[in-house]
Image (cartoon, rainbow, N blue to C red; front, side, top):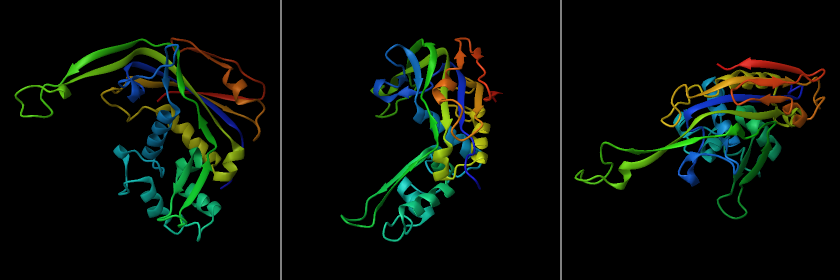
Length: 279
């Protein structure tokens, strides 16, 4: 299978209504914001959701969440050794390039996003191996179009989680936060040059293209009730060659998104821009 033949840029416009799209554990799990009050959803959070949707679509995923784990491995190291074999991760028996190639062939997210396999030997000077894999798919953090309004509500449990039940403990009190309503946008790109090293193909790019409109399906929780987050539009730019006619920065700037979710898209010469509705 040949690697990615053309440079690709993409953008995901999504809406949030009465939900916490990405809580900050260092700030009481309040929705993430920058210093100017614009809402933020980190690239790590977005990649987690993409991995989950890819896994739903039947793709093999290395970095599985505990909630969606489909094997018996309790850590990434155990999964790497169990699937690839310990000899593959033994620097004395397998070269780093061979190990990286096998990992990319085995897991979709490794050949898409890259991965660092850094496992020490059992003792100093042992047979551990460190394999850095740089992936061709990069994703920015998503930011809201306008500063967000956050509502915080105090909540209580109807029962005690600890003790003898005679009185309510501190664990029965808590806070719940939500973004009232906002439009976010995230940008991304796919590099054919890096795809040559991992084996990421045109078919792999098409798979990601198919799951992006479904980014929040099957992702419901107490903080993100079903239907509170939705992909409104995916913009998919395909260049005519591997290097691309324009820089990603220039391509991304052709999209202007408004607070109501509407947008303006400037069409650049010889650059294909496909507009895909959310699921």
